[in-house]
Image 1: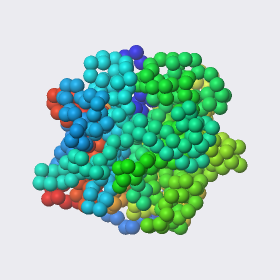
Image 2: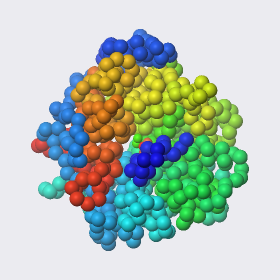
Image 3: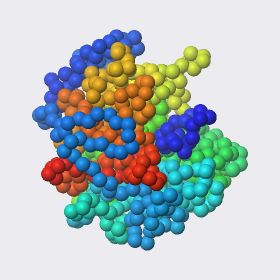
Image 4: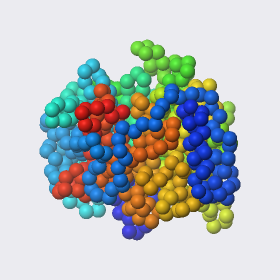
Length: 640
Ligand code: FEO
Ligand code: CA
Ligand code: CA
């Protein structure tokens, strides 16, 4: 651990270090292929309950998917290890926007050696692009994009440690993160930002927010600066995204815990301290990665103990109004939110699937009380309803357990603030780090990337199995079937009656990543749809396009050695939900994570996020810069 530079780690890596169907016959083929992986079944049988995943007589859903042909409009590409982007023959890419590019004409010019100064750091595109969504507002294409975290050594020119040493440096980091709203347009030269568009906006760690829902006004949210507990500053560690049916953006606060610290010993309420422990709030008197607390008392839990309770939520933003106040929707729970995948249930209620990305944490589902009526009142849809948590049974069935006062012994506000604790009380299934959930627009089903879990099934010295921070054992189970899972898997589920609001579902594993070249047999070889041509690890970002193709983005080990030999750089692949085939579409530059995906309004351009690239991207010289690229197909053909 001494050799690790925390400034070189992604937000997820740093947090992990620091804290603690298609037509039935088609689907059955996928399962059979998974069973037929040489030696795979044997490996599962050794693991006991996990054998049930593939031991059941297939997936019994009667829901039919619109008939689809296997189809990929590209020839898969090879793994790469260089410092640029590769796309298939017949496709091309260009850079749309990078960290430090101006959104307003009064922004300072980006200095290739020193980046951007504090004055103006809120007038440029932020760092480390992540989830994004496209909104067509009138004739304007408005892209809303998260800036998840900062690489401090890049942002703090001259600061060799990369730990802020002044209020000015803290402010610069605060202003490079959050959310970017930018109008973009395409002309003969390609896509570009419309500088000074009235839609353009930067939302960062000091932007005023409204707090709504069950936690609003609760004592645990009150601070000296906000005695009402209903307004806060900033949205933190904005990871994945979501788009509501009514045209608003959902940004997801993930590793918010990492911004807090203490300048004196922390004592106080037992429930508050227990919450710090469950959510990994650092109470040690040390600078940490961001050292916000050294210069901004709001982030010092020895002075402002309730501030951490005001982050970790889904935040709704209206991209059509640059003056609107973002709203923290506490009804959707407080945890390390990855993304927010919306669906409309059979009766019109709104469903939002939500992952909590930490080892052994849970998968959630929000169901609104009221129905969505296009053009009607949408103000209650993320306010009034029920949050559920997933329980996956080993027989490939599962249920969504409602988090209620009766079954948790907690008030609605407490459930909203300490959601993890509530979910532990009802026996939710510990998962291998739920990253993005994607809802299939052409079939009633959803998928979730379970990126990896180094501690799954690992035993302590006393023989007990490792737990999550709440004490729930991370025992190997059918949906998380591998010990020390370094590769990850994608689970999919189908609600009964084809209704996303239903509280019972059937599930299977769409893919188990692996490496059959290194592990000739056993579970680490991966499922049968993994082969020498599509090796990858750590599925993370995921979006299903309008045709039902699954786009999978990775955030994993890219050293291309050992267990990861042949996988190359992080990448984006496309998966066919019917046949299970997975083909590699894009490779990112060395060091990067590929995350964030959306399309232009005409679906003739695909926008892909390249986060924390290594040196040499996008330019051979100068600082590496997180960027969004635009991918096009020859002849301006459709790309999704
Ligand atoms: Fe920000 Fe779990 O990824
Ligand atoms: Ca992610
Ligand atoms: Ca990740």
